Amino acid sequence: MSQQPAGSDDVVDLAVIGAGINGLAIARDAATRGLRVVVVDRADVGSGTSSTSSRLIHGGLKYLERYDFNLVRESIRERHLLFRNAPHLVRDYPMLIPSYAGDSRPGPLIRLGLAAFDVLSTGRRHGRSRSVSLRTVARRWPTLSRRGLRGASLFPDAQVPWAERLCVELLLDARRLGARVLTHTTVTGLVVENDRVAGIRAEDNASGARTEIRAAITVNAAGPWIDRILDGQVASRRLNGGTKGSHIIVDAFPGAPDTCIFFEAAADHRPIFVLPWEGRYMLGSTDLTYEDDLDEVVTSDEEIDYLLAETNRIFPNAGLTPDDVLYSVAGVRPLPYTAGISDNAKISRGHTVHSHAPAHPGLFTVIGGKLTTHRALAEDVTDAVLRALGRTRRRCLTRSRAFPGADTADWPTFSADFMRSSPLTPAQSRRLLDVYGVRARRVLELAETDDTLAEVVDEETGALAAEVVMAVREEGAVTLGDILLRRTLIGLGPDMGLKAAVACADIAVRHLGWDEGRARAEITGYEAELRRFRPRVLATSATASATPSATPSTTLRSSDRRTS
Figure 1 (tube, rainbow, N blue to C red):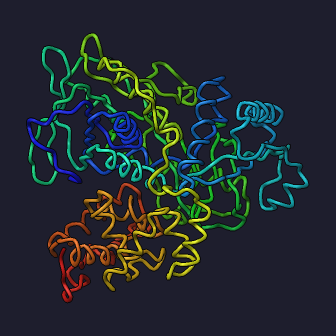
Figure 2: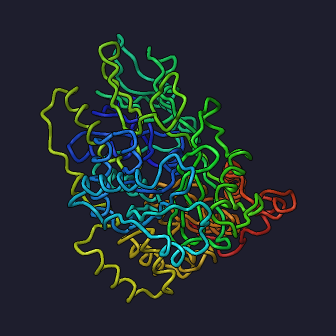
Figure 3: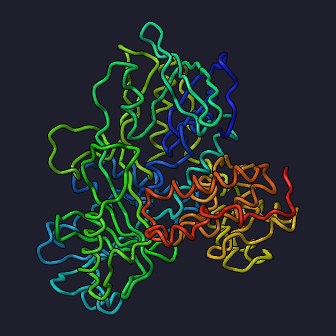
């Protein structure tokens, strides 16, 4: 548990179920407006749907196809605010949109949509879209298939390479504002009194300690799990109708582009991406109806074959096979339930703040929501909460509030100064800035307190031992998976951090009070957590036997033990 609850007499204004990006954003917004807030999640922050997206800060271009102009405007505005408030995490990300014979969306229609988007984004754009001639395509993207190519357009979008860090920074800011975030704590039920929801019951996953948190308002922001929270607690129709989206991660391949390619799949006409991502490529995503276990969402062989085939089609020299897949990422989009729909792309990507009153006052459920528009969703939820509490609406402050990693008057100047003064290599320094923003200096401060904290724990990224300590002491990490996958991001490398896992566990033994038994258990638990990614490094029994969990006791250091 990242923060201990007070006890059975705990009373707050707002209890939020779910510490994904939406739940954390709600806590942050509500705390800025003076509400006492607690957030509870059975796992880590951002460990569900929030970490399984395409990592794009969409301007909302594809929503024009459904004439959802309000969502497009909202997406454009929120993208603009993220560029301003989180410049260390969000970057410009141009994407080429080729148009081929047989596409369901002909080139003229795409260009019309881009023109409309440019009009809607006036004053809030990072560049304008433009048509690209076939001659330019041949010169600039020479490996892109020209068979049936009719034209192309270049669209200026945005990317957040580390969506996990977006969640962590929302956590940091919410806590700084007074909100409490309880991770690895399972909500076991709602407190219902005379049909009114008066809070939640929860249990610490590790200790089994139970607590009751009484709240004037409870918000169910559990993403695709919202119906599970309500089941057996309050009467409700089905609210979630999420679809499964999968991505696969590969190394650079023959003919790999240096810009994102957004194209239409030949098999089903679904728009998919080839996404350059931190030296590798993300291919995706699928959009499949999903009715199976939400806790066992794994990319299927059929999805892998589909994404590889479509990538090989538009990049004929790629030659990608399933053996090239480093790992895969699958999640369920938290979309509204829509009965009888045959095309999942037609399901709204907007959000709804659903009140369960008058049947069950005191309870709201958040339906839908996107990475890009998390702040707007949170503003809407807090407005609804204040109305339900009968309080005067207070001005929302998050539109202009910088994220903790961007807490500086001049980000470009800070970045340049850090690169110039850092004792680390340029690559290490750049990575610290990209991951932590201005808090990169805090990593160096910790490293200066102990020589062992200046050690590199992962050769792939150059990550320092100090980051492991900061992840637990200051960023709410509890497990090794929290540290590797959602704080230091070592676990998103080609071997998913398995080579570094033992070194990181050893740091936790020496500096964070773990004993060797816990370290071994954490390594084993981390390997188990990775299996849903289907990592190549665990694909064969020979490889698995060489992973740290097989012989952790022999690789953990037995000397120089220290705890703090």
